[in-house]
Image (cartoon, rainbow, N blue to C red; front, side, top):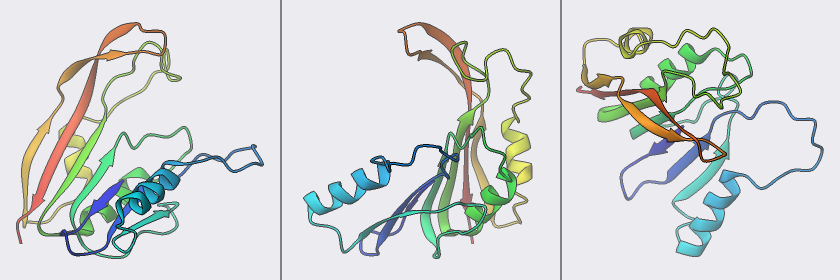
Length: 166
């Protein structure tokens, strides 16, 4: 998930939990790249890269923009409570964006499995939003995806944008 505040407030960027690994040597992560980019841009006082297991801890603060992009994992995770907590972190006037797979590409590690993807309406309902929210977008467009060997397939993604109005 990515978090963003106003231009003058500290910015924090989070990554989803990493599945358990048997690799004993730490590898460079997206967070390392964020920290290096912040240092190269001279904004380390405003960018704080942090890693959270979102089932255990959650970033403090209220944000103008919260995104959950392809928040899928082979590890069992209580996804709906995490997304509800993400919605709680949206400031009045702010936006929660959820972009996720709604179909399986033929080259996916999940290909051939019987998977039920939630519809945009299912995801919006699972957020359990109260009245001060407006659904700006909730659809499932198709796109052409390119696989690791250059093959292409038509896939569907859910695109959800909800704005906290008060």
